[in-house]
Image 1 (cartoon, rainbow, N blue to C red):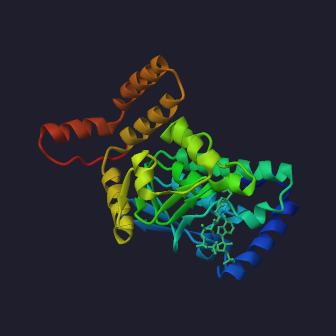
Image 2 (cartoon, rainbow, N blue to C red):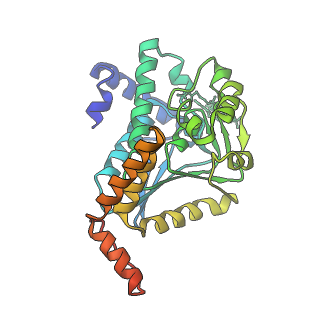
Image 3 (cartoon, rainbow, N blue to C red):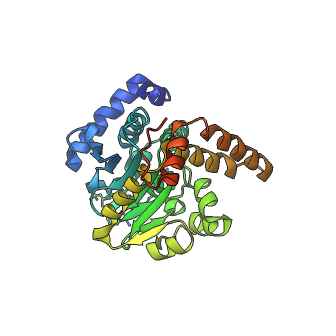
Length: 290
Ligand code: CAA
């Protein structure tokens, strides 16, 4: 997995970058690259926390690799039925790491963008439902990371934006595509071309954010929602997610066909018998995920 991701750069470059990164982490008060994304089980939910608070969880290469590896581990773990992603400190993530990006050649910048895309697509493509719990700044790559999650819950203090044009850049981790699909062309253009941040209330009004909470209530609300999602039929949730994703990028007739096929397929699961029997016998279902 890691080898797939690192295949974009030579091993020598990777080693050098990792050495540099470790030095940067030490400067920033984090001792180990694997600490960059903390992973904790909370019931059937996995809580991932970006953990580079002194740099406002800016996404450098090492953090993206740590995130990718955490996402790949979730994909292989059948016991995890939902995921919550948040940030340590006062930011969710303040974007791609500007200090690291400043040194990139055009080809290295393309590889960096590809790494972000592959990481976020792996997150988006998980079978389980995912919730971004946006505790503070979600700017640039941080906003794009939240957009790769199924739901976005936000603190009243959260700020969203695609400020790349202020740096002479454009979004590089999916901001032009996922933002457009979530909020439509008018607000995507306002955010990407204007580069101004928006508050949580505005983000909810334009449907970038699902729900807004008081700062202290955010994480508990996201974890509780994740546990409720985890109690639903896992095969059904996975198929519904897949049909929604694939259906939004196809014409409506093909989307209808996708839904019909998936509806038939879900009848091959044990869970659909359990779910309907539970309803008919007035008890709670016990889904097996098969
Ligand atoms: N990259 C690297 N370091 C960052 C960072 C980033 N994106 N965002 C914040 N930091 C660092 C700051 O350099 C600072 O470090 P030092 O303490 O070592 O100086 C630390 O985090 C705290 O930041 P500030 O002192 O700036 O905190 P603030 O409260 O005054 O401002 C902020 C907060 C408004 C979020 C401001 O930090 C900011 O504007 N950050 C940059 C946001 C941005 O432009 N993001 C887009 C990046 S480009 C991108 O993401 C491209 C892509 O799609 C791939």
